[in-house]
Structures are given as C-alpha cells and as structure tokens.
Image (cartoon, rainbow, N blue to C red; front, side, top):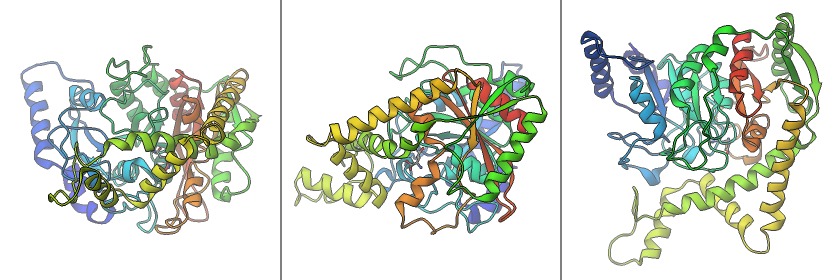
Length: 451
Ligand code: GLN
C-alpha cells in the first residue's frame, strides 16, 4: 500500500531520492515467512520505513543529497540502519535532504526540491524535508532523520508531524555521513507520538563504534508516550523564544497548547535563557568549522564523483575540480567560513568565543532545569515558507532554526509536536519540548499530552 501511495503522489511531493520496491516487498515477505515459521519477530516487524539519505545502507546508493556522492554504494550499514533492519522494519527507500544536511528547506539538495504535502508551493523544512514530507503524504508511517541544528524538528513542525532529537550520544552516529560531529544526532520521525517513541526505542542505545556514544539505559520513551500525563509537571516557557519575527498564528497556537497542558494539570512558568540569543551566531561558527574538517574526506579519491582524471591533471587539480563540480553553493560557503574561523589568528576570536557561548547556553539550560521539568517554545518562528522565498538569503534561511539550535549546542533531548494550523495560512505549527540530558522520556510525556 505504501509503495502504491509513493507511486501515486511522489511525482508531485518528491520526498524520495531512491525507492526500492523489490527490496521492500522481499523484506515484507521475509517477515511473513518468519511469522509462518513461528520464528521470533523484531519489535516493529513489517512496518515500512523511509530513511534520510545520510544513513549508510548497503545495497542502495547513499548520496547525502550531494552530487559528489552520486553513484556511491556504502560498504556497510550505519548502526541505526542495522538496528532497524534487525527490528524487521521494511525499508521503502531513501529520502531527500539538503546537501550534507545543510539547510532548512531541501532547496539545497543536489538533486531536486521536496514539496510540502500541505501546500506544494511551500517548503517541507530541512534538512530532513524528504522524511517529513513522506510522513505527511502518507508515503511512510515512520522515518529516520538527523538533527544538527533542527533538521528533524523544523521539518516535523512545518509538515504537522512528530520528530525527536534524542540526547546527544544516545543514538549512534556510526555510518551517518558527518556534518558537524559534536552536534549531529540521529532520531525518529513519525505521525503519532507513540509511533515515534517505538522507533526511538529501536534505534537508541550504546554503540561501541561511536566514540561519543553514551553508555546509559534508554529512558522509557514508549511508556511516557502511552501515559501522556503532565499532572504536576513544571513547564518553562522560554521568554527569549517569542516576540518579534514569530508569526501571529504560531504564537496563538503555541499559547493555546499551553492552555491545554495547563488544563491537564501542568504548571506553566516563564523562564529566561538570556544566552540563547547567541545560539544562532555560535552555531554558524562551530558547525562550519566542523563541516570544513569533516568534508575534507571528499577528495575525489575515496568516494563517488571524480572530475578531470584524464592524465592531464595533477591529483591536486582532480581534487579541486571534483570539489568544485560536486559541492553546491551552501556547502562551499560553509567550508569557506569554517576554514576561515579555524585559521590561525582568528581561532580565538571566532571559534574560541563560539565555544564559550556554547558553554553559557548549556548553563542556561542547567539553571532552568533546576526549577522546571521541561522547557517549551514554538519549534520554528513561522509556518512553511514559499519555495524560493529564502533561497537567496542565507540569513533568513538560518533563522528557521532559532528555537531548535540551543538543544544541539547543549546536547539535551528535544522534540516537535503538531499543535494545530495557523489561522492565517492553514499550515501546521509545531510545539517544541526540550528536556534535560537523558530525560528524553519527558519530551514524549508532554508531546503525548498535546495529541
Ligand atoms: N538548518 C540547519 C543548518 O542548515 C540545521 C541542519 C541540520 O540540523 N542538519 O545547519
């Protein structure tokens, strides 16, 4: 049924870079055969899944949305990919994203732009716009994403779906093509809170292959999603994440959701996180610094595209020609910013200051969590903007992640949950819940109460 749905709508939504129907049907048959033979089945046996094309999956291309990886087939599975296969989920295909997960609209994809199923003229968010659009268009019931600055939560917000960034270190980055390693975190995407929690439980947990993996028990996210009880929970509304630049319909639906939670017994207080105002600026120094280093591996020798390998060019020229042809404008912009920020003489002024700001942001969270159980805000300041509207304005594009970036900087868990449609444009609004490190269950507890 999902393959039929993809056939029917993906020509206009364009959520998928790659669909492998044969593989999906064979996997579904294998689940049936196991069931018939009375063999034990994985926890989500037979449930179809869309995978953001940044997770390595053998037997299929992995592009990270970049032309530089066109035609590359990974030789191994990411840990998260392996876990979904072991849980007997059925992989439908790989979804579109901004190149190397850099963007908020999928317009930076090296292949094509994905459309928002609520209104095809609008962006589906980014970078994981393909996964979110696949969910919203009923092409898949579950999807995988990665969140470096909001790439799970912002697409969830603008497509009326659910997306959670787990605590940093709780889902393995092994086999996930790196953008900014100190911020990247794989996570689950779904249409309901419980579905999302079920996928979270499958993918989370310690992995010896990831040096920043946290060896701690996975919080009971499924239990929290089932209970949906916010009685006595203290919710801190972040004062700095509202006001100028926030659409009236976003503010309105956010406030209504707060009222609904208060009616269910949550206590609402206002909290100030004064250093959040530095989050966007610090992110756009730390992230490109890590990008410039991580993307050095695309050297025309190891993976994918190779340009100018005709005997007339030196290895260095082949490298330069390939990177010029294979990387898009946003990727180049970030490599240049990162290289500049890390260069000697500028390191302390830029990268060093950004790291200090990062520490202050983490302290804002710690201070806040002494008085409240979770922090809440809109997930993104506006609803889905028009395709093309911010394409030539990187700063306007970057502002889409104003509310989501602080949690990447501090590493805590955060999720986006639908809270209605903005009256001015009938487009989905997202409600963000931020929980302390390793308290991912609280994100689901509040999200489920909103549903
Ligand atoms: N939109 C943000 C960026 O462009 C976040 C990306 C992400 O989370 N992968 O960097």
